[in-house]
Image 1 (spheres, rainbow, N blue to C red):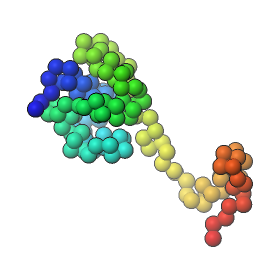
Image 2: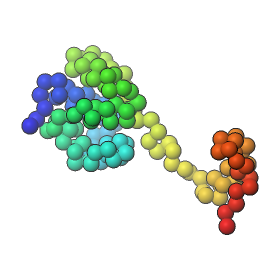
Image 3: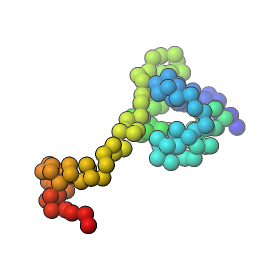
Length: 131
């Protein structure tokens, strides 16, 4: 059953966030599957983005957390969007930012020579050797 009423508003807001705020026109759901950590399969997200499936409260929570806001803020923003009011742009923080660009040797050298990292781990990283 296609969403209607406020359920359709939630989907429309998700579509706005994806397309306008994040430049994502991919309606396959694969990007959402990736950024939500696989919380739902891509075909599930695809139905929501295409407007053929309603979001559940769990979906709202997953999406809100993905974009760094509370579910309550997500719902309030969806209401504002439905009323034609402006909403602040949202983006997924950290996507691709935590991917190491260092080689294992470079990373090991940094770990061994940085006392702050050693203190964080509670040990002397300079004594850690790979065989």
